[in-house]
Length: 307
Image 1 (cartoon, rainbow, N blue to C red):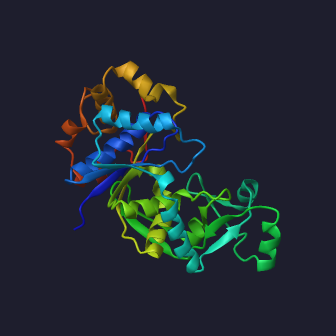
Image 2 (tube, rainbow, N blue to C red):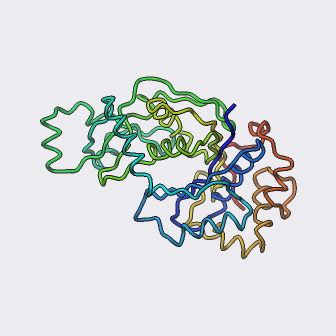
């Protein structure tokens, strides 16, 4: 068996909120309950939104909450060479093509599927070389990866069996944006492989991205991690918490609960990790936590109302 290695993967675009804390806590518990190691990766692909003060802040926040890591921090802004090598490998397989669609084009032509996800209809896939050259003179293209009409499946540790036919449920997806930045799907797969990640714990909103990542892992010769997609803390039904929800921000949580242990304890009680709403450290929760309990842990595996 491979050693268990998990990761925190925050985006430095603001202070943590209750939903981030819950996902980070679950990642830590899943890994540490199996005697594993945690990696800290700062996902700063979005250079415009990523801010130095938030990079420092997220590390301080994790430490304050008792969510420790064993390696890192690693930064995506240092990884363009690795992403380029993976991109070149995909391109050499004849699977990459330029896409000239605007956002308006995509929304007009794509069919909505599985919540927020749009299925790309392959608009630019069969363009002639002459047409590609003509359009490239007018607009810098993004680059998409062709997908097969094939089902990719996993047995998620929380959500259970899940599958997608990539052609029907997703369509060809971006691996590089028109501004030259590498897309999240490619970067996260390359980073997980390079950092030895075997356990990925994150919000259920990313479950629909997992078949794309399984496909990329296969094409690039990487092993598949184990996945656990945990429920989202929601401000109200079908509206997940975000950094705009000030009442769930870490500053407000500290003002409301007083101590990091009280914050952890409240989130643990709210999500079913603890029976009482009282201060808890991650180490105290670890004493009664087991990965085998994940499938039955949550009454609603998709949404948990914040209060």
